[in-house]
Amino acid sequence: MIAVWGALVVVGFALIFSPHFPEGFSTDPGTGGGGALGDALYLSLVNLTSLGYGDIVPTASLLRFLGPLETLLGLGLLTASISWILLLYRVLSDHRSLAHEISLLADAEDATGIALTEIQPDVAARILADLTSKAVAARDDLAHSPIAYYFRPRDPRHALPLLLPRLIDVVDQCSQPDRAPALRLQAGMLREALEDLLDTVAEDFLDATPGDTAGTLEAYRRDHMWESRPPEPTRR
Image (cartoon, rainbow, N blue to C red):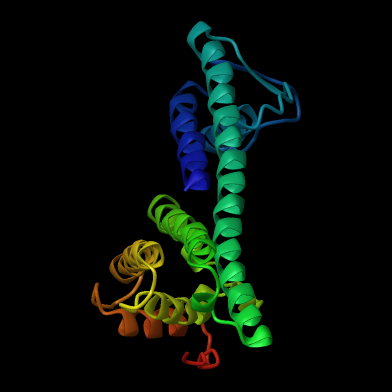
Protein backbone atom coordinates (compact mmCIF):
# COMPACT_ATOMS: atom_id res chain seq x y z
CA MET A 1 0.00 0.00 0.00
CA ILE A 2 2.81 2.42 0.85
CA ALA A 3 4.52 1.59 -2.45
CA VAL A 4 1.29 2.43 -4.26
CA TRP A 5 1.10 5.78 -2.48
CA GLY A 6 4.72 6.48 -3.45
CA ALA A 7 3.99 5.69 -7.11
CA LEU A 8 0.94 7.93 -7.05
CA VAL A 9 2.98 10.82 -5.61
CA VAL A 10 5.67 10.38 -8.29
CA VAL A 11 3.13 10.32 -11.11
CA GLY A 12 1.09 13.19 -9.65
CA PHE A 13 4.04 15.55 -9.36
CA ALA A 14 5.31 14.45 -12.78
CA LEU A 15 2.00 15.51 -14.30
CA ILE A 16 2.42 18.90 -12.64
CA PHE A 17 5.99 19.28 -13.91
CA SER A 18 5.57 18.02 -17.47
CA PRO A 19 3.63 21.01 -18.94
CA HIS A 20 6.48 23.30 -17.83
CA PHE A 21 9.24 21.42 -19.65
CA PRO A 22 11.62 22.69 -20.94
CA GLU A 23 11.08 26.40 -20.37
CA GLY A 24 10.43 26.12 -16.61
CA PHE A 25 13.64 24.23 -15.90
CA SER A 26 17.35 24.63 -16.28
CA THR A 27 18.88 21.41 -17.61
CA ASP A 28 22.56 20.52 -17.69
CA PRO A 29 23.95 19.84 -21.18
CA GLY A 30 23.85 16.16 -22.03
CA THR A 31 20.96 15.40 -19.70
CA GLY A 32 17.27 15.16 -20.45
CA GLY A 33 16.16 13.95 -23.83
CA GLY A 34 13.46 11.71 -22.43
CA GLY A 35 10.67 13.99 -23.49
CA ALA A 36 8.64 16.23 -21.23
CA LEU A 37 6.86 13.39 -19.43
CA GLY A 38 10.00 11.24 -19.12
CA ASP A 39 12.05 14.10 -17.69
CA ALA A 40 9.16 15.01 -15.38
CA LEU A 41 8.95 11.45 -14.05
CA TYR A 42 12.72 11.39 -13.52
CA LEU A 43 12.69 14.72 -11.66
CA SER A 44 9.70 13.65 -9.55
CA LEU A 45 11.41 10.41 -8.52
CA VAL A 46 14.63 12.27 -7.65
CA ASN A 47 12.66 14.74 -5.54
CA LEU A 48 10.71 12.01 -3.75
CA THR A 49 13.86 10.11 -2.81
CA SER A 50 15.68 13.35 -1.87
CA LEU A 51 18.68 12.44 -4.05
CA GLY A 52 19.10 15.99 -5.37
CA TYR A 53 21.27 15.34 -8.44
CA GLY A 54 20.83 18.92 -9.62
CA ASP A 55 20.91 18.06 -13.33
CA ILE A 56 17.37 19.41 -13.76
CA VAL A 57 16.60 22.50 -11.69
CA PRO A 58 13.29 24.42 -11.68
CA THR A 59 13.53 28.12 -12.47
CA ALA A 60 9.90 29.18 -11.99
CA SER A 61 9.07 30.24 -8.41
CA LEU A 62 6.17 27.83 -7.87
CA LEU A 63 8.08 24.88 -9.28
CA ARG A 64 10.99 25.57 -6.93
CA PHE A 65 8.68 25.05 -3.93
CA LEU A 66 7.17 21.84 -5.27
CA GLY A 67 10.48 19.96 -5.10
CA PRO A 68 10.98 20.32 -1.30
CA LEU A 69 7.27 19.57 -0.78
CA GLU A 70 7.60 16.29 -2.65
CA THR A 71 10.74 15.46 -0.68
CA LEU A 72 8.83 15.95 2.58
CA LEU A 73 6.15 13.58 1.32
CA GLY A 74 8.85 11.06 0.42
CA LEU A 75 10.36 11.25 3.90
CA GLY A 76 6.89 10.77 5.36
CA LEU A 77 6.37 7.66 3.24
CA LEU A 78 9.76 6.32 4.30
CA THR A 79 8.88 6.83 7.96
CA ALA A 80 5.52 5.16 7.43
CA SER A 81 7.22 2.20 5.72
CA ILE A 82 9.61 1.68 8.62
CA SER A 83 6.77 1.99 11.15
CA TRP A 84 4.68 -0.53 9.19
CA ILE A 85 7.53 -3.05 9.09
CA LEU A 86 8.14 -2.69 12.83
CA LEU A 87 4.42 -3.06 13.54
CA LEU A 88 4.20 -6.16 11.37
CA TYR A 89 7.19 -7.68 13.16
CA ARG A 90 5.49 -7.12 16.53
CA VAL A 91 2.21 -8.61 15.29
CA LEU A 92 3.94 -11.74 13.99
CA SER A 93 5.87 -12.02 17.24
CA ASP A 94 2.61 -11.85 19.23
CA HIS A 95 1.04 -14.62 17.14
CA ARG A 96 4.09 -16.85 17.46
CA SER A 97 4.27 -16.16 21.18
CA LEU A 98 0.68 -17.33 21.66
CA ALA A 99 1.25 -20.43 19.54
CA HIS A 100 4.52 -21.27 21.27
CA GLU A 101 2.99 -20.93 24.73
CA ILE A 102 0.20 -23.33 23.73
CA SER A 103 2.84 -25.73 22.41
CA LEU A 104 4.82 -25.53 25.66
CA LEU A 105 1.70 -26.17 27.71
CA ALA A 106 0.80 -29.20 25.60
CA ASP A 107 4.35 -30.57 25.73
CA ALA A 108 4.53 -30.07 29.49
CA GLU A 109 1.23 -31.91 30.04
CA ASP A 110 2.36 -34.80 27.84
CA ALA A 111 5.85 -35.02 29.35
CA THR A 112 4.80 -34.88 33.00
CA GLY A 113 1.43 -36.58 32.78
CA ILE A 114 0.00 -33.69 34.80
CA ALA A 115 -2.99 -31.89 33.34
CA LEU A 116 -3.57 -28.20 33.92
CA THR A 117 -6.72 -29.11 35.83
CA GLU A 118 -4.68 -31.12 38.34
CA ILE A 119 -2.62 -28.23 39.69
CA GLN A 120 -3.75 -25.47 42.07
CA PRO A 121 -6.78 -23.72 40.55
CA ASP A 122 -5.36 -20.24 41.13
CA VAL A 123 -2.14 -21.14 39.30
CA ALA A 124 -4.06 -22.73 36.44
CA ALA A 125 -6.31 -19.68 36.24
CA ARG A 126 -3.27 -17.38 35.92
CA ILE A 127 -1.95 -19.50 33.05
CA LEU A 128 -5.30 -19.25 31.29
CA ALA A 129 -5.41 -15.51 31.97
CA ASP A 130 -2.08 -15.04 30.22
CA LEU A 131 -3.32 -17.04 27.25
CA THR A 132 -6.51 -14.98 27.21
CA SER A 133 -4.55 -11.74 26.95
CA LYS A 134 -2.47 -13.15 24.09
CA ALA A 135 -5.58 -14.41 22.26
CA VAL A 136 -7.24 -10.99 22.56
CA ALA A 137 -4.07 -9.32 21.25
CA ALA A 138 -3.90 -11.78 18.34
CA ARG A 139 -7.48 -11.00 17.38
CA ASP A 140 -6.91 -7.23 17.57
CA ASP A 141 -3.70 -7.57 15.56
CA LEU A 142 -5.55 -9.33 12.74
CA ALA A 143 -8.22 -6.65 12.75
CA HIS A 144 -5.69 -3.81 12.46
CA SER A 145 -2.91 -5.54 10.48
CA PRO A 146 -4.71 -8.13 8.33
CA ILE A 147 -1.63 -8.79 6.20
CA ALA A 148 -0.15 -10.69 9.16
CA TYR A 149 -2.63 -13.51 8.49
CA TYR A 150 -0.83 -14.41 5.26
CA PHE A 151 2.53 -15.09 6.92
CA ARG A 152 2.80 -18.84 7.46
CA PRO A 153 5.38 -19.94 10.05
CA ARG A 154 7.59 -22.88 9.13
CA ASP A 155 7.83 -24.21 12.67
CA PRO A 156 4.68 -26.08 13.74
CA ARG A 157 5.26 -24.80 17.28
CA HIS A 158 4.35 -21.36 15.94
CA ALA A 159 1.34 -22.48 13.90
CA LEU A 160 -1.93 -21.38 15.48
CA PRO A 161 -4.10 -23.51 13.14
CA LEU A 162 -2.39 -26.63 14.48
CA LEU A 163 -2.30 -25.65 18.14
CA LEU A 164 -5.64 -23.98 18.78
CA PRO A 165 -7.52 -27.32 18.92
CA ARG A 166 -5.29 -28.41 21.79
CA LEU A 167 -5.97 -25.19 23.67
CA ILE A 168 -9.70 -25.55 23.08
CA ASP A 169 -9.49 -29.03 24.58
CA VAL A 170 -7.75 -27.60 27.65
CA VAL A 171 -10.50 -24.99 27.95
CA ASP A 172 -13.13 -27.72 27.78
CA GLN A 173 -11.43 -29.64 30.59
CA CYS A 174 -11.15 -26.52 32.75
CA SER A 175 -14.83 -25.69 32.21
CA GLN A 176 -16.21 -28.88 33.74
CA PRO A 177 -18.77 -28.25 36.51
CA ASP A 178 -16.57 -29.86 39.16
CA ARG A 179 -13.70 -27.40 38.62
CA ALA A 180 -12.99 -24.49 40.94
CA PRO A 181 -15.08 -21.38 40.19
CA ALA A 182 -12.02 -19.21 39.45
CA LEU A 183 -10.74 -21.75 36.95
CA ARG A 184 -14.12 -22.14 35.25
CA LEU A 185 -14.52 -18.36 35.01
CA GLN A 186 -11.11 -17.87 33.45
CA ALA A 187 -11.70 -20.77 31.09
CA GLY A 188 -14.93 -19.09 30.01
CA MET A 189 -13.08 -15.85 29.29
CA LEU A 190 -10.47 -17.70 27.25
CA ARG A 191 -13.21 -19.51 25.32
CA GLU A 192 -14.81 -16.17 24.42
CA ALA A 193 -11.43 -14.77 23.33
CA LEU A 194 -10.75 -17.79 21.11
CA GLU A 195 -14.22 -17.61 19.59
CA ASP A 196 -13.67 -13.91 18.79
CA LEU A 197 -10.31 -14.75 17.19
CA LEU A 198 -11.75 -17.55 15.08
CA ASP A 199 -14.79 -15.49 14.08
CA THR A 200 -12.44 -12.74 12.85
CA VAL A 201 -10.48 -15.31 10.84
CA ALA A 202 -13.71 -16.77 9.42
CA GLU A 203 -15.25 -13.43 8.47
CA ASP A 204 -12.19 -11.61 7.15
CA PHE A 205 -10.03 -14.31 5.58
CA LEU A 206 -11.94 -17.55 5.02
CA ASP A 207 -15.10 -18.73 3.37
CA ALA A 208 -16.30 -20.09 6.69
CA THR A 209 -19.29 -19.55 8.93
CA PRO A 210 -18.65 -17.51 12.09
CA GLY A 211 -19.45 -19.60 15.13
CA ASP A 212 -18.48 -22.87 13.42
CA THR A 213 -15.31 -23.55 15.40
CA ALA A 214 -14.48 -26.90 13.82
CA GLY A 215 -15.12 -25.68 10.28
CA THR A 216 -13.10 -22.52 10.79
CA LEU A 217 -10.16 -24.43 12.27
CA GLU A 218 -10.19 -26.87 9.37
CA ALA A 219 -10.29 -24.07 6.79
CA TYR A 220 -7.65 -22.10 8.70
CA ARG A 221 -5.33 -25.12 8.77
CA ARG A 222 -5.89 -25.82 5.07
CA ASP A 223 -5.39 -22.19 4.11
CA HIS A 224 -2.00 -22.18 5.82
CA MET A 225 -1.07 -25.43 4.05
CA TRP A 226 -0.77 -27.60 7.14
CA GLU A 227 -1.69 -31.00 5.77
CA SER A 228 -1.70 -32.96 9.00
CA ARG A 229 -3.60 -32.48 12.19
CA PRO A 230 -1.82 -32.15 15.54
CA PRO A 231 -1.76 -35.23 17.77
CA GLU A 232 -5.02 -35.77 19.54
CA PRO A 233 -4.78 -34.64 23.18
CA THR A 234 -5.14 -37.14 25.99
CA ARG A 235 -8.50 -36.77 27.69
CA ARG A 236 -8.38 -36.52 31.45
